[in-house]
Length: 591
Image (cartoon, rainbow, N blue to C red; front, side, top):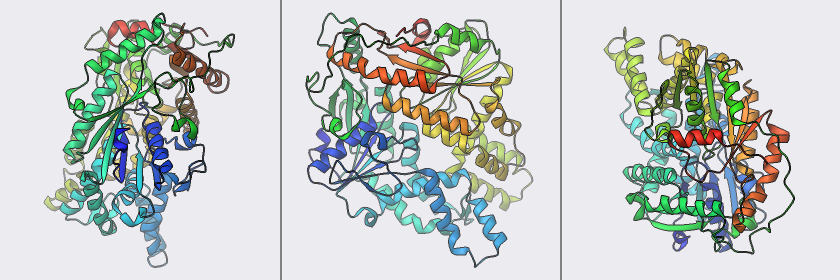
């Protein structure tokens, strides 16, 4: 961990979902605390799993981690932060203004924008208000997957600029007078992010081409925001120790190939390589061993024999048969970042198109590129797109101006244009585009690759709030928005595939996702357990350890969570392009 040679006060860990951001952030925080530094570890991920990794229940306030004397941790919970923010803004007016006026304010602060600004407000307070963290030597931020984090890190500049240029004094969050008090903190947040003496951005990636490309894109975008002090962690480096193990040799080859083509923008960064661990990184003692020498026998569990239990997974061909039988509708892949949602969505879309069905493949994840999974290959009946936040935001602005703004006078149009420049407009526009994509399922199949869990749940949870916000800005609510929840709740129209890896955090995050979906009256159709080693013949001690550690999670999914599940084995060659995606759907793990 070279970035700890002379650590800055703030350390941000970001990267594509599933690359090990939380593990690296936790290991860093534990190491700094073990050196006697007072450390606050903060998760900005709506789907945070700090609790599970550290083995302690966390809340919205710093909580001491019992196993590490100088370490405190907390989660920024968007809903709790929104409730506190709402009360802070409305509370002073209770008993002062009429009840009806207070109720009107509460309704205004119940929207999706409030959830986002409240979480951002808490993040800005920790980074921009020195008095809020004066008890700590270091603040370590474990962030959500890239797309969500880029949005978070652009908000300080976006809101500062919006408040400086706003002339109406109002916004989707009510009177700007309430926000002006925060403006100094937002400015300080921008300064902290761009100060190399105070802040280090640690880009975490895997030795895989797709995650290296995303790390490079993130690095470039953050440099444009002024975040110059960056370091690179390549997590999960693997070197085969058993030449006769074909899986191990193939895994090493995939690592080497990815590093040979690493984007030039990353090559100049200070680099730390972390070996692939033989088990999940759960618990403080395991975190203390992060970065030890590859294949260290002291951390490798011994291989076991005779523990294979028959698991009755569904053949992938039967899953495709069931999906194809409905002939139209929406199929969504959901789960933690990095579990292979994009690849599974693309493989399902190809399999349906090859049966002569009309299929549209798209994504709600700003960091995902479904076209990359297809590697420019084409197939009859399959169309591809992505919901580009910038494009849909501009389209939404033009739509609102041409409808709600059509009959306004010049002053009214000016106020409407100012309102639409709010950073919240992007969230509303993406939601609208998501509703439109779901509506396309009335005329064929739409396969939607969704953003990582936390962001997707916020999107679904906020359906009613977005409905109100769209109603506020537009003259009428589009049919696609009106029918969104009924469509998502109709099992004959929407089928959700919960994608996971056979590991602790992805499985437990998927379990919470399933609970959230059921609360929203959306029943998952099937689970897909991706990249399993369980059915493969391996001899390498690290891979044997990982194979062994998969078993309780496979059992947990099959016996406790999934009504039906498919297990897809780890692939020797990356599953991209038509041939790779076809191979993925042919492969069936028998455990």
